Amino acid sequence: MHHNNLHLWQHDHTFGQDKKRSGEKRTAIVIAVTGSMMVVEILAGFIFGSMALLADGLHMASHATALIINLYAYIYARRHANDSNFSFGTGKVNALGGFTGAILLAAFAFMMAWGSVERIINPVSIAFNQAIFVAIIGLIVNGASVLILGHQGDHHHKHGHKEHHHDHNLKSAYYHVLADALTSILAIIALLVAKYFGLIWMDPVMGIVGAILVCRWSLGLLHVTSAVLLDKQGKKEIQKKIKENIENVDGNRIADFHFWEIGPNIYGVILSIVTHNPEPPEYYKKLLPSDLGLAHVTVEVHQCLGS
Image (cartoon, rainbow, N blue to C red):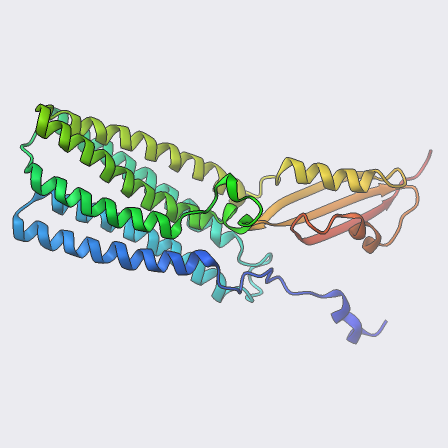
């Protein structure tokens, strides 16, 4: 065989990671919005001498940091999409961005809980009107951010938004702005109850409720993204389809099976097939449905000896 025909069996490992994702632009807009609000709050906190304002501004800074990490993950994956050092492309950068965001989210939940417990032990007097005003502005800004990053990952959009459903990086950014909006809502409720009913303890209690919710989101995201980063076997229903399509023909048997996510909604699969009548690998690849997102399929064929 002439080696100049080798290109017929070669392919790139970009898998569409060089294209700009819709989440990238939306994350950039949200960073701009959150960043502006953060600067305003920190300045206002200094000018009006308000601790609540300062605290909220710094809290927004932690979210802005997480969002910048998410944006960086998008850009990095795109820039390095054609880098041959990534043996299966840069799809997993998305999961890494989501994983990092989830860890920051957990740290943020812990800080919320810690601050709230401290407030229960040592209550502080609150400048209600000022604090409520800030919380409302915060809610408007965060609400806008949630809408910008929104309609993602929800089950209602299974068909049209399959990409978002698996965009772990976008999910992390979305949870961060959602946590911000939630904090603002809880703060407004707590401040109104404290102001009109004198229940000062409502403020820290709401802080703890918020922390528990944020912690749950974080754990969910850590669970999903760590599975991708650790090459855990992909979705059960796709595994089943692959096995059925191969094993329903000619009495083939799959001896060795590796199936893992190499990027949002794209999978790699390595099959070792044992059969009485071996065919070329291409034959088995054609048995696999084309709509499963299998971007990298490797087939090994062994002849079954004996009866």
